[in-house]
Length: 169
Image (tube, rainbow, N blue to C red):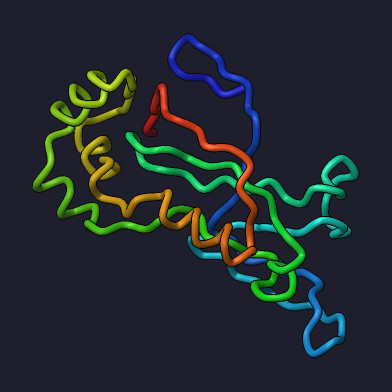
């Protein structure tokens, strides 16, 4: 359970996107141990990967590509192509187009919260600066990135999720 104030939310899925792990991958037709450093990336192991739990073996690794506070997030699954081409990795988000410092200086957290509420999205954060540095406009559109990884085949689209609430720690 994840506690927010007095309310609890069950954890659905948790995945690292800044991690280095020793993994076994195929290089030049040989199975070798390598250290895979995923910075801004996440695992996208394909179907049949030994490192997946049994219930995911036929599907592949669940992949979450988050949007911003006001844009869609996506659920995808890893592919065999990702195993061959990217050490079983895919992106974790679309990337920033504005630095955190610039966002805090030029955006107003209270206005962002009010604008998102007009769209039916509730925002909770410990400070207005925390909201400003993660505002919808500071990121590239997530749908463009998702379309690319889907079309290239390193992750396959399963579902599009629209935000209803945002918790910024």
